[in-house]
Length: 138
Image 1 (cartoon, rainbow, N blue to C red):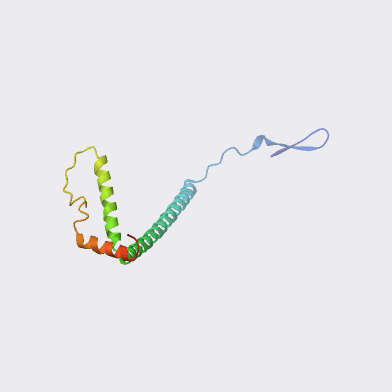
Image 2 (cartoon, helix red, strand yellow):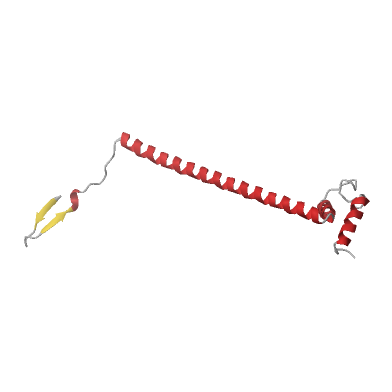
């Protein structure tokens, strides 16, 4: 920097001699780039670990839900034998709806559609007797 003295004897700074560009050595530039790549790899690894932990939690929660569902279904079957029949009817309705909305012609045996719901008369009779004894049917 160059100082100029003015007539009133105050000082001012001449900025004409400023640093315009500076180039670092190639070794230094490579070290900085390697550090940035290492940081990016570290962030990517953190992301992968976090994603794996989230997937693990999701699997555990799903398994707990399925276990609870199995317990509830088991309880419903034990309390009401007609529950199985009701589930078969629901499944048959879903299958019939899917087949009816298809643009293709489908020829299936009624047995494959679960539409033979009353074929097992022993189960139906037992379910009705149980339902009547519990006051669900009149």
